[in-house]
Each structure stands twice: as structure tokens, then as C-alpha cells.
Amino acid sequence: MLNSKINDAINAQINAELWSAYLYLSMSMDASAKGLKGVANWFAVQFREEQDHARIFMNYINSRGGKVVLTPIAEVQTEWASPLEMFKQTKQHEEKVTALINDLYALAASENDYATMNMLKWFIDEQVEEEENATDMIDAFDKVESNKFGLYMIDKELATRQYSVPAPLSTQE
Ligand code: FEO
Image (tube, rainbow, N blue to C red; front, side, top):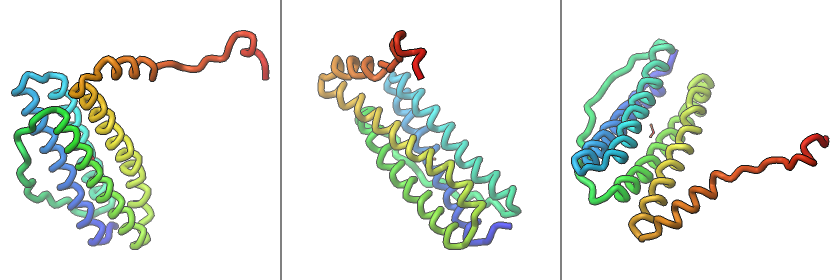
């Protein structure tokens, strides 16, 4: 059974995840309206991922005998000056979400709720990925907007190089 403090805190996190979903859907729609199909797709996927995050928390509350309470989702921005601005805001927002997840983990620890701490570990790892994805996109659009797209493409190609053991060494221990 979940204690009410943890239940309330997870309900607040569900709202934050759904607000994130709404924010990214808004970015997707703005990109669509401007003919940026790729950017629109990236944020449409992000929209789905955020709904999944909310769902994971909802399932968790239900499995622990708690009660999910859905509260209003605040309005979101509807217009961005460029994809770079969208991704900068995405990074800032994900850093905030990371702080929320950390607070939730600290609360669970203070309440000796080991199951909740365990469940949150997936989110702690996920936030590292969320921040990294946003940083990668900022980097890409930064290079495009500062006319360094060639550098970006070469760098991307170099990132695919993989080490392989030369044949004469492949049978050695
Ligand atoms: Fe649900 Fe983007 O963190």
C-alpha cells in the first residue's frame, strides 16, 4: 500500500508528465504548420513517450493500491522562433523534470519506500537520455544556424567509426 504522501507526489508527477506531453505536442504542431515535417515527427514521438511516462506512474499507483487523481493540465506555449528555440526549451524543461524525479526519489527514501525507489530508477536513467537527446539536437541546429552544417555532417560520420581487432590479433587470448 502506498502512503498518501508518496501517492500525492506521484500524482503531481503524472500531471508534470502529461504537461510535458502537451508541450511537445504543441511544438510538433507548430513545426507542422511551418512545413518542418522531421521536427514535427521528433516532437510527436516525444509526445507519445511522455504519455508512456505518465502511464507507467499510473500503473504503479494502481498496482500499489493507491488512487490516481488527474488534475487540469496548464496551457502551453504555441509558437517558437525556430527549431533551435524548441530544443533549447526542451533541454531546460527536461532538466526541471530530472529535478522532480530526484525529489521524488529523495521523498521515497525518506519514507523507506523501497519499491518506489526501485521503480524510479528507470526514470533516473531515462532522464539522462532525455537530456542527452535534447543536447544533441541543440548541437545539430546550432551548427545549421551558424553555417557549420558541413562540420556537423563530417562529425556525424566520424561518430560511426568502430574499433575492430585486426586479423593477426583476433585469435590471441
Ligand atoms: Fe517524462 Fe521527458 O520526461
